[in-house]
Length: 63
Image (tube, rainbow, N blue to C red; front, top):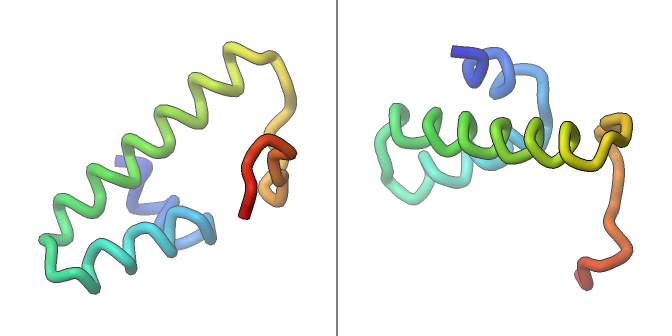
């Protein structure tokens, strides 16, 4: 799966994976969560037609 590589090279996916494993969940479940995150990102990019930026911050999300 490409989620293995995403956990190594993508900071957001690496953080998600580490957070889930730290909660005591299985590593396989964490990889599936990373895979779902990537699918959602790919669908959103295909739907919007915009170019992917790794450091993009939405103006709609309030942090």
